[in-house]
Image (cartoon, rainbow, N blue to C red; front, side, top):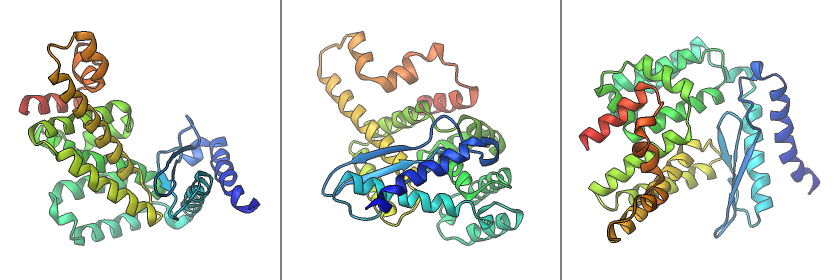
Length: 284
């Protein structure tokens, strides 16, 4: 029992030591580890590492403590493996990765010029860094692709380099999550029931990926964005039933609209992100 309890402390100590020299490790210093738990037929725990990578328990756990230890074990194994020299991004690795991506049948379903071009630029910008660091950035672009953001920016004639530069600096924040949820709320209004279908698929992906012991952030972010959108769709439907809801009531219950529309005159977001959402509103 003592050894299993230690894995949580071991993971904390590992990242605490990396924070002593943040320049060398390349990880953020705003926090160490974030644990999130949920209960159902079995207990589930997620642990998010300083850079944003997320792992969960892959075993069936009957207590939150057991799930926490199992999630920490998966995260620790991945953190240790990430330190190996073979996990560094090199020119040889980039060449092999691009060749594999070009021959991958899943890539051919998208615009290969745009997807492979973006992938190549991202890889080259991360030479000398680790695969875990690269995956953290790739998650952002996976979400942008899934949400339709990359296509919208391409249609607006933004270069791949400018998009990569902007989102590499901006990262994934609450504004971006809320804006994506607002996009899905718009799709729900045009096609009722769409969010529930997408959310069901996202939850299945999250469970299956967690049970394989793989990195989870993309699937977890999708689930949370869609859950936020679904909650707002319910609130929006409820408010439409009311007769002439007051301004204060509307702002209290629609944080996504307040964030993205109501305060637009005070919006200090860079032009790139602002232009994208103007594009969506004008075309909606």
